[in-house]
Length: 160
Image 1 (cartoon, helix red, strand yellow):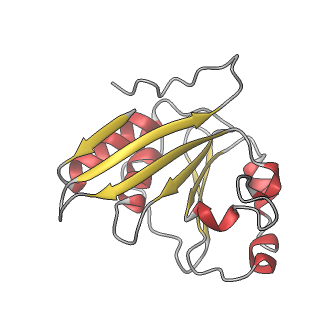
Image 2: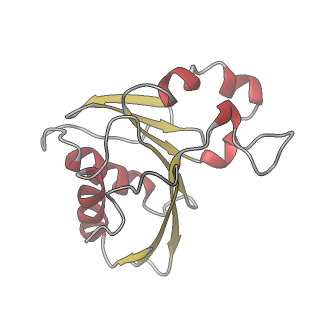
């Protein structure tokens, strides 16, 4: 499924729609270049998942992990600055990923296994992947896919 936004506000609204359909235990992986809109989409996801509209939702580029309390806990993780597998392993991600929270990870390509390039670390299998590409200064294309058990269809498909 694809969606195109033409402004940061539209990206925020798309995130709200997505966030309203996420459930405890969902893992969302955000792929995209710097400035693609990952944090803006995450802000909308958090609001849609029940975070107070006056909450300060910021990029965890330097803190690495931000935790928010919406209808369920929300973890927003940014792996951009991590260089080594040891740094990733020391974050305690496995506990977060398999918790009863919504987990959103920016730069998830850092979680791809060195030994098996088609697999993620921590045995991650069930996930929602969102690939974001910039078409111009304001236009973003979002490509959604999910890897879930065949017995479960996620409510984000379709979003509208």
